[in-house]
Length: 284
Length: 267
Image (cartoon, rainbow over all chains, first blue to last red; front, side, top):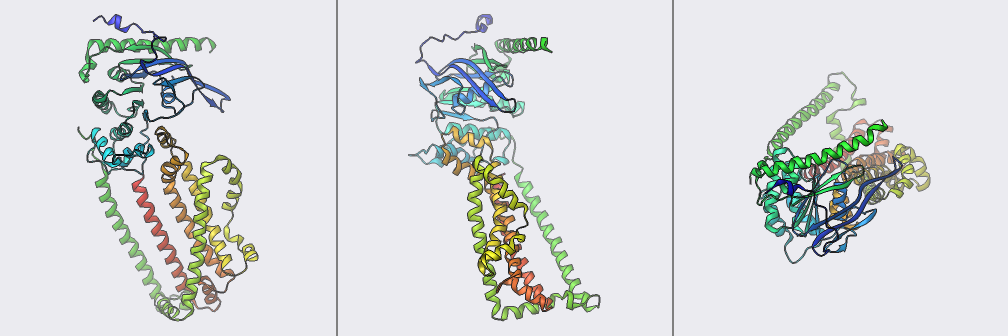
């Protein structure tokens, strides 16, 4: 396969069939009031994105490019300033049972054990018809923490904590899994291991996954499509389909095509950074 | 799957147990040494037992106090004043602290008066409390309440404010409403701080009751302490003082034990 054709930036056919996309982001702008600076900070500016059911989409870009804000807007945890997010064609107005979030800092309740943390979402969504503890136990086992059910988060390593975070999100059986730099605070090796395991779990049920990261390798390794973002203001600059065969292993990262993707994304990010400097430089 | 790192809990647990045994041993030795010197000093003519008394005399005085009819009445009076005042302090301090921690407007509204009371030595309010409530039980209950409620309130507020934003966000991501967030995140998340406030408030409430009884009253352990003092009966006086400090120590230790349990569970 000719890498060149694969790497052509694919412009979103935005007027395609709406029914096909599981998540649809329409002209979305997210802003935050910043009282200190006395103004409004635009985190995401006019983003458009279609995510098909069962695909794995990663968002990559520098800090401040709005990738997390975009994710939180899809989660319904951040209200957009304008534009909208549609899930299954219905506008998102807040969190919903169809979506679950895995947080960067794990966001586990320190007073709860591993098992009770996995139960947390089930309790809040008032699951019934099945013993919650039995269900939670199944998901603890799924992420490889059998035997650690009664440990508290502070007794676990970072990687193990995020396994709990993933189990908690999967336990409520969402259609969409939203991951906000979930492995951002882990060391490189743990990070690779977690990535492979996440893919293994994902391939069992192919939930739609949106994964925010600033790691280029991670973004390529996991994705069906990569959303590249830039900052000032935060925006989507390119959407790259990844045509690497699945299931993927660590060796995938050494393939010629993988390296080609890596180079392309790096150039793309560097070009944006350079352009940003050029804009700023004349003023200084 | 390989376990990436084994928890270090076990080794830490062993170390802390042995070091706490060591601590108990050293502390016991200190107390024993103190009591011995205290007993010997007057006998050796190094000090006057009329002023500093002696452990043996204090014990003898204690036996006599316990035998007399008034003792049970005094202990009952002091304990019930403390219990009622402190229960009120918890019953009002915790809910109010939770509210103030949760709602900014309320905090802005009530922060100045609370901080003013916090900075005031609560015993300085004693005379005016007696003017308002008389020299009966009510004024002691009020002093215990005022002493206890402020640390409880302030610590509860701090506990609520210490609840991580990400915990709340996680709860919301699972469709939690305000009440769910409160019950499943805010309450358990601030519990440790609440218990710490209760521990700090406790000693101030005990102090409040005893000093209020010493100031003006008809009954209670503090009242007895004052009477023995004016009669120059150091043995009797010290027994009562010891009683109060033992009570304070035991109660504080009990709360601290609870706190440590929460701490290890919720770090």
